[in-house]
Amino acid sequence: MLNELYQSLDPVAISLGPIAIRWYALAYLAGFVLAGVVVTRVASHWELGLTGYEVSNVIIGIAWGVIIGARLFYCVFYGDGYYLAHPLEVFALSEGGMSFHGGLFGAVVGGALVCRACRISIPTMCDLGVIGAPIGLFFGRCANFVNGELWGKPTDLPWGVVFETGGDVARHPSQLYEALLEGVVIFCVLFAMSRRRPARSQGTFMGTFLVLYGVFRFLIEFVRVPDTQLGYLFGPVTMGQLLSLPLVVAGIAVLAWARRTKRQQVGHVEA
Image (cartoon, rainbow, N blue to C red; front, side, top):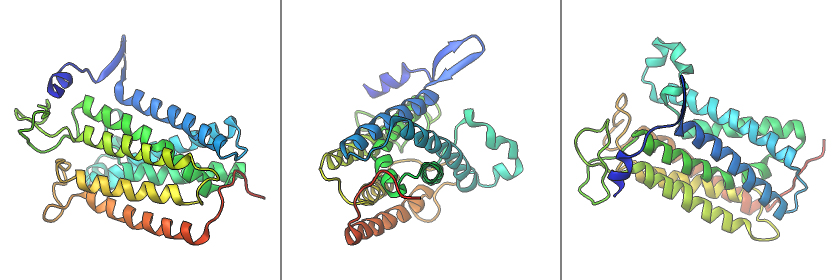
């Protein structure tokens, strides 16, 4: 069933003469827009006093941070020297190559810069942002599936998919595994947690997100084929797993800090 679905999909969603709009681009757009809606609703539920204008500004800062950070991290950690020899290829975003870990770093930096300018609490916005982030992850992984990239190892399971670039063999649709775990599951957990009033202490959501994503990504890497230019770093360990372990450690540290300090979520901070 999944194989038939994949074979019927076209990576290009809309073609207007020489202009081709790909599902990957629409996935990013949908992810940021819907994440902004979720952040706005949760902020209202927590009675933080944040306006839609302020949230939109932060989301725009996060979006720029995600794109820049995700691309740069991919070029540095997954490029295997290629982009040093071809520096202009760094700007070839249409050819793919984005790193979640870099996107997360960029999102924090981009969002923090806007928060400082608008005097919005950075820890609170981090907690709000990660509640909406799984939506973007879900759409992004679905777009990976449509593009036939980041596929998994060969499998004889009934939902195996024969990807165009993966040879004449059915493979794990690891993109959809990630869409389910990193997207649907993490969102459901964090959104359910956000329903509590008063809101849980600062750092709770960020820490939970980091731990869940790091664990899920580490496990899925066992059935996902690593990038060709890198392969396995040592034994069965991939670059994705190596970069995920620090996230788990950081998440546990943030949760410990949140439990110890028990700081309340606030919308704005004093100058």
